Length: 620
Ligand SMILES: [Ca+2]
Ligand SMILES: [Ca+2]
Ligand SMILES: [Ca+2]
Ligand SMILES: [Ca+2]
Image (cartoon, rainbow, N blue to C red; front, top):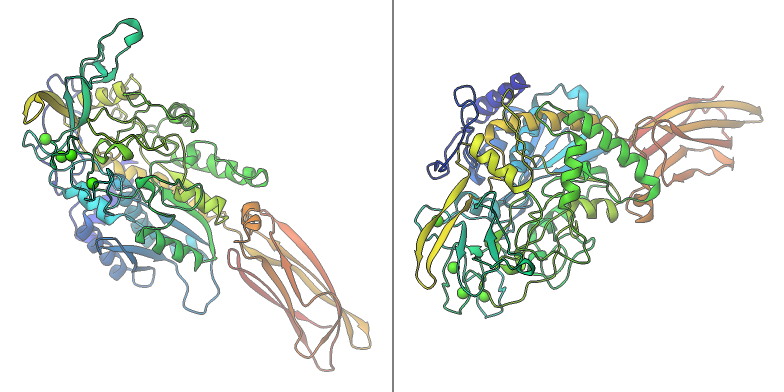
């Protein structure tokens, strides 16, 4: 697979003219006590965000691809972000205006600002699709939105200081003091980053874990353990209201702003479903494209490694897709699906009673810089699960969303839009390089093991003492922004390859209308009996059960075009709510009276999600 990655990298460099190795991060800091794995054989991988594209580089790369492949790739603005940045959509294998629609797949990435790997993989898929033999995707259209949240992504890549952010940049007044985003994280030690701060005092609830003091856990007061410190984002009380970093920049999580199970009264989810221009633009696009069969999002929830909740009639469809995903993405470096499932199970907290511990229950990063109302929220599969930090902020935490997929794109796509709604995390568990001893720990300890042995200590800043203007001596350190969601850029090529393999498989499952048989038999006196069968030669049904329930999936229309003929029995226009996949068929019989000299009748079947077919039926 290393070979394929090189190809992708060369393609990226050659075609886009954009360097994938532009350093955008402050100099790497070496950990105090790294024990690297065979450093000579395995050089330290690049540290995120080195090589990840900012908005201008991504735009250039997309435009370059479109101009290099004008017949194959079209890149257009989908909508504009809150701050006026373009949200791009690439169309591969689109139809001319007025031409019959082709079944299509919509891929959406980088809804969460800190899931930059989604945009890199999406760009990689556009490149692969541009270069791939068009025959392989014949009769299908692939739409790709590589970065739905350009404002948040830009902030994560280039913010001063750089700090974790998951939302877009809608301005929000979290503490209801009449000012918006007035108190965000601050860089206390001048390293360009706002990380985690540990401070002593009456807010303390945590102790350093005895196995690794870099890990904080809640003090077990029942056993007489005394809390030592509290944790918050690295910062000061900018507005002098007595709370630190209580209203940071960053507004609505674009993977929480979708209508299905949308959560009220929570700043992170928006003031109403689709309130955000980025989400609104995309949902309008989806409604204007009834040919969409599947929506595949890249983000923090991952239902391809879990068990999505579906209508019973749709479960076999999802089971097969999940199997195909496991096959396509199986690599020596990837965790076994069972392992990943276990990890996801561990990350799933019960929705009814959100956990309020001070250590994240997951191995995913906490979006600590997003204020109290923003923390501890996550999709199934580790959406930055975790807990409210012990900030000195005054307001009570909003109800938790952790362990849910409420308001996520993939959930809306299936539950309300009625199509195959799937979601991929892309990278969830760090591994040692091939040939090196495997990492052995789990959870936070595994990430630290990876930091120490694989990354040369570059991803975690050791806690060190800093003088705080109001709190006195504090400690500052922790994970650098985005490093636990976005792999070193060298690993992205392999993710593109495995997910492209799955995309090929999924495209091969598209419902496909066919006319099985169509014959006419003369009955005398200008009367003919027409018998025909219409079938679905694809694997997926022309509509999921949920698509029929929600009335969003257009039916198959079967029409016998009569011209001057008259029908004696049978209906001219027939509707099929859903034609099952893998050869599901429907038989039709008509009796028609045909004027002298008529040589043929025409049978048509069409469905936006399954294409159009036509057959001339000769009259004997
Ligand atoms: Ca405020
Ligand atoms: Ca700092
Ligand atoms: Ca404040
Ligand atoms: Ca602050």
